Image 1 (cartoon, one colour):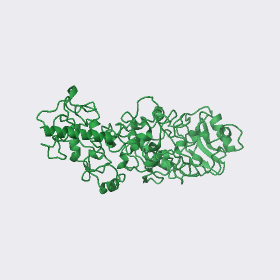
Image 2 (cartoon, rainbow, N blue to C red):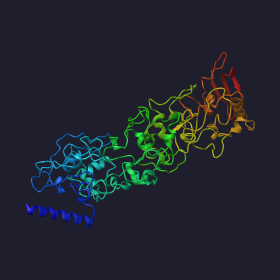
Image 3 (cartoon, rainbow, N blue to C red):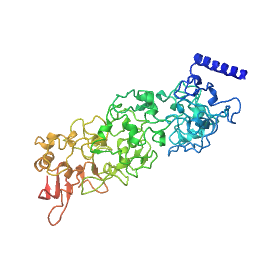
Length: 566
């Protein structure tokens, strides 16, 4: 008996000596559950340190000299539509960890004692909280799966384990709790083998495409103290320090699939993009009347969903790839860094894995989708597929995919020319905001500037502010223009108070429905205002007779044009 006590004291002395000499050990960590332990959970009188996990005698068959029973329960496992690994019921080192951390066995219940070791403060099981994973592991990083070269190849964003030379530890090609955690050393809480500052631990295995240049990796933005701390689950204070943990947490995640901080997709983004961390307040824009409504269809988006989108929904991650988004600017029609790495639909209607042009992103939902939004204006030619409206073979179109067809547009203001190309988001974007993109606006339908479509609107710059971002207000509304065609514009929108939208379809006219004689210059009449002409041959059409000449057959504002030529 004296020899056993002597060995115990020598062992404790060696542990303490090693700790003082080389740094952290189990002795001065929360895994020291003895009465001398520094953590909030400790035995009431037990002085032995290792006994809570190990024993030299009467151990279980499990190595290393394990002193606890297996929990003997069936666990709910992590699952995801994007996982290639096959997690199994916990085994190896993981089942050893869970003999305390699932909360089913008393902390003091060890094989080498006939009576359970008493704990202070009446504690018996692992208390509820971060350390108690429960038997539901669906919200925790997957464990007990084969991690080999085959898995890395099929996943595409995992490192080949043969190339991992750091402290990450695999157990017989299986990833267990001990891959990330060293139970005897707590240099990096909670018992991490590598610090997760700047995502160092995550990046030991994960190699997300585009991450090296992503804003979420590089930004040094901090929380300004307003609202809720977005990083209450970490000890870091900047976006780049938190890295993956800006959006994810490896244990007890609220969004089980993909281990996100919050269940609802947008909450993971708006935790920072609400003016508290990110410079631009996207949440404020999303509170406006007309918006991409992120709250209408939670948990519908899937990373691998087929395109075009079949079930109408919108989430931040439909338009932004948080692993690839950058601050890189671009010129129309090319996609900026903010939407880089996102899949879309090209001008021919084919899915693309990564968009090259901004309009390819919009076409995901606003082109061939069966549940796409409809036009708010009844047109002579109805078309809600924007991909068809912007086709370069059309009789006319706003220059989104490429330069327009009109060789003479005297009303354009600098820097726009007949060769200019514009973005969808030049018109559809947040109003009164420095945030780019169509998040939310006070202007229907999610327009950056006002665009009145109500008949008999008195013309002002503000009424058609959207149009006047590119077209000269003075040339169109006053008599300063030398062009008869421009004076015709004044006659209609100023004198007759006819909105631009009554004659012009802002997107374009599909070549399968219109032609260059009747539908040049974006002519596609609003049938709520304009009717066919009165007479023997009722007609509703515009006839293009060449540069600045044409004729209209229609009835509008109690005037019969049958035809009215200019």
